[in-house]
Length: 201
Image (cartoon, rainbow, N blue to C red; front, side, top):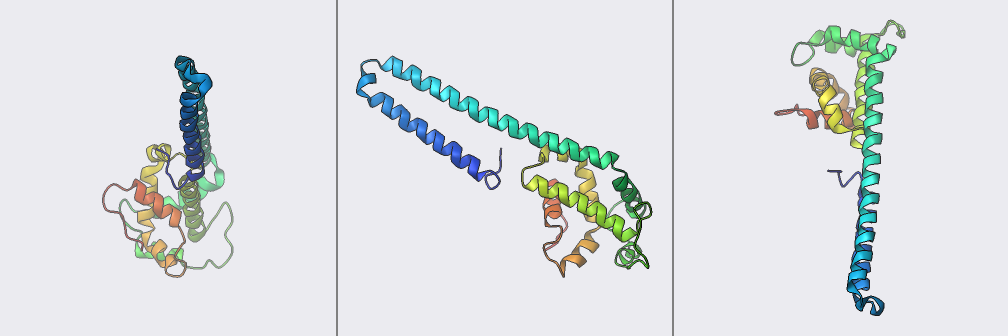
């Protein structure tokens, strides 16, 4: 079901059209020109209802298709983008099998590198920030309805849960100064997590 808060305008238009159908039906049933032939009025009303449902179904299918296409394109980028793969490989070296990053990795994240890192040789901070921001983008797009949540759940649920839980100490520390940082990623993590999620608030 489409979330109301994302698609309130679409629901409003659909509701107004539905209300219009109700008034149209009442008009046809009470119209002097149609009362003599109620079967004809019923046929006209049925045809209008079918046309209305066809338009609604067409719009829904188009929205669903566009979300799936956008999601597939984003997933393809995660699997083929060179810069992402370089950063993800460095992040993977520090990822624990389960749970949070160790204290050394957390300290390394907040350690300012002596020189700006390069695309081919990023610092741990830059690599981590890049990967976290990539998933933050996916989460924001999903919450806005641009991405398909179910498709993401089937493909990157484990990656999202593992990443957020591993970087929980980092995210919590950052959010002490910027409370809204990674709000979207945390939202998606809570949607995907089976069991009790990590508390960030």
